[in-house]
Amino acid sequence: MRIEAAVLSKFPVLKNETFVQALKYFIVGGFCTVLDFALLYILTNFVGINYLTSSVISYMSGTFLNYYLCTFWIFKHRAIENRKHEFLYYVVITGIGLVINTALIYCFTEFLGLFLMLSKLLSTFVTYWWNFLARKYFLHTIR
Image 1: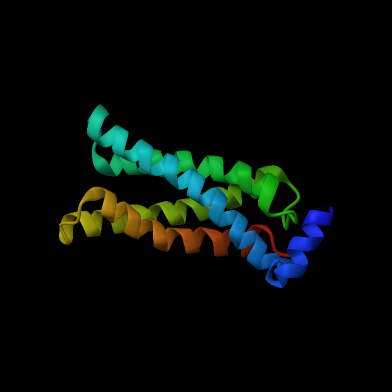
Image 2 (image 1 turned 30 degrees about the vertical axis):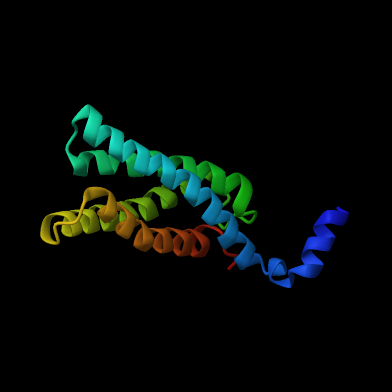
């Protein structure tokens, strides 16, 4: 408890709930992104699955892990008490993120001729912010 108070006194920005949530989301997102990138690379290059199919599988794997980590560690408030309804909203937000992610990967790879993993990296920057802001607003904001 003393360590936490000492840290908070030295870094007052850590008292801002949204900042702390964004920081935790960045950590969880980083872990899930490593899973996402690794699966994309392995499924495409070693298993021989089409890169767009691999992208969907890897994105969804990272996303489901992200859901569990977010609900238990990052966002303490639940705007939707019914877990089934909450998960349904989560799936809709994820579906929109998946469409954004897949479309960007396709455009970067096919039209700009970028290396698949660079396309994935660029699309991740966009979908990260969509996912964080949509989940925070729709699933974890007091109304």
